Image (cartoon, rainbow, N blue to C red; front, side):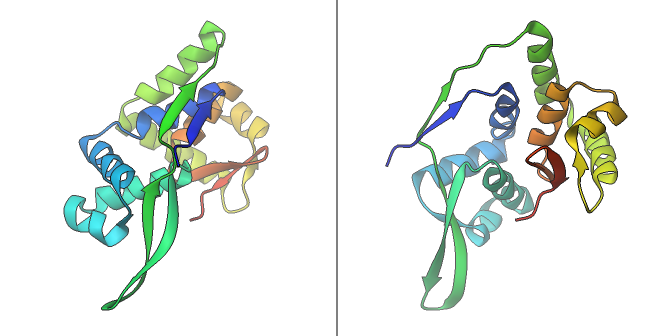
Length: 165
């Protein structure tokens, strides 16, 4: 089946761009696009960075999963690309687009510091997105982009919470 991912919210561009921002992520995505792969297969070939890429793809819902069994091993979760193509249809004011692109292109070291600050502020219970944006002195658009880039955080309605597999 050839499913199409429709991107109509600008913040969705950030994870799409970050999903292939390294050689490992790009190669892992190619592999899961061609066939089902387990985390163990990916780890053997790409190491822990490959497994983290799978987790990120799962958070973005870019992969589907199924349980796979073999005669010699216990059941393992296998991953395969969910979409065959993307359709991007969005327009936005220049300021919002600059927020989105700034987060997408932000150096990893700078982003990790912001992500850590977000994670601490969110805590175990989560936090309302408006309060979090005010606390960090960022726009709602930038907050959405920061959370979408994260493999540790996610939106649940209007709350930002820690991402759970």
